[in-house]
Length: 90
Image (tube, rainbow, N blue to C red):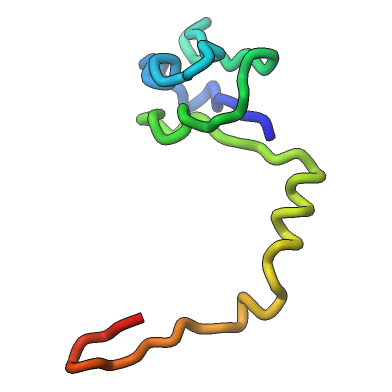
């Protein structure tokens, strides 16, 4: 998995760099830059980005595993909702 910055969305606020545990993020040319040789793909920076400019990208092998983990019947099932004393419980 790799983590990357959308240069068009980033406003160079530095919140991601502040929370990077290994110091892989620097602010260059008006946006954040992630050094992939240092980045450990912990994804701590993703929720810290105010502009949602940081994204994770799965490698082709990881993407195949992620899709194969979802059973084919999962999209056809609906959650079971039971009524109890007038309250809806899942």
